Image (cartoon, rainbow, N blue to C red):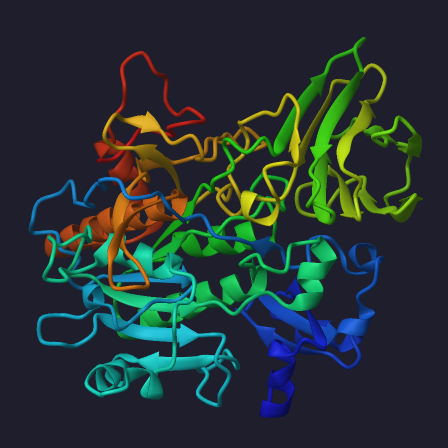
Length: 553
């Protein structure tokens, strides 16, 4: 890739696709006027002129290749007393020699929580994908990389942003870094779990406009896309190896776009990297547990029909929903508008995939269906709603005669839709967001640490394939964390629970190095150590879909 070609990576004139090419570069020759950027020897991002994207794009390119969109999972709780983040391990475990990697909204590197006593930064690397220059990381071709030396020079200058103009405009990445490894700001005690750990941070660029519009995500929503997250994780993995340090990778973002089975390109990529030597990977469970955005039904003959009631709010004109069914039964769906008009029937048949559009008054529904989606091997029916009428829509779902029929439906995450759009008789389980259903990473749920109550918002398992998730539950309500205004505030959300757990994992890695037990330096062995140390309540069977294998303090 040359400098001219690399501009397609960030150009709004080019659409992105995540593909599995398995080291076969001839794979890309079939796409004219396109370019590609390799993630690793198995996965790549393909960039194709955006005019190829139309309402048939899912059928032409495949559901699995279209990047999914991810949102935030942290929110400021209010002016209440926070719970100081602290390690359950001895004071010897400060995280020294361990890298904590965060892929999110960036970091306020000027915040005192990330400046050591000698006035130098604890950030070893910062890749800002949103600032384009010719100083991109080697092999990644976009954004700008800032080193520890450059950040230190900026901190010593009168105007740091002239030298390192990277800003966290959202605050989630800054809060996560503070909970995991923040130092003292000379006004309160140290808040980070392992203040001796160093940081590597990726600030994600925002999702491209065509993709946001395709999925019907509000323009004001903070939205990142799958390929940039995968690139960010790859950046952390490569640089941790180069620096010779173990890395705890911390992902706090959330998406409802998946089968929730943990079998897709992104999940596979995380699974393949999670247990590499020197890597510990953690993923947030998301904040969808109390949102009424999930519906589940098991139809057992002779009762093979169900009516799904979806209330659509006044402001939610455009959004996407996904229905996933379990083979060999195929689903038949009648769509009924709020005024009672039967507007379309999706009939189960042997057509492997199809795309149709339905128009009723001013509402348009684009429907893409697969009898067996490539990675999940489940039936997928994706609805892209446009200009939806307010009111109660009904979906009459029928299964195959004499077969048990199960199906799930997921609405967008809470950040991409208002509280006025929800299912009646919603199911709070199977609400762990992508990529938290991936098998090998540590998936973290949230609890309120004063009374040891599960956080209402936290996602709940198991996966749609009944694999035990979450892995562990950690404090995630009212954790004291740095904000963008050099203050400390109580912040909640599963991204904070994940950052807290990342600090504990960094302590475990440091301890294993000190004891010369280097066999523990991967996700699997750190996970087992967490589970052994976890607290489990009496009269509760573990693993369970709310607490996983227990909770950490």
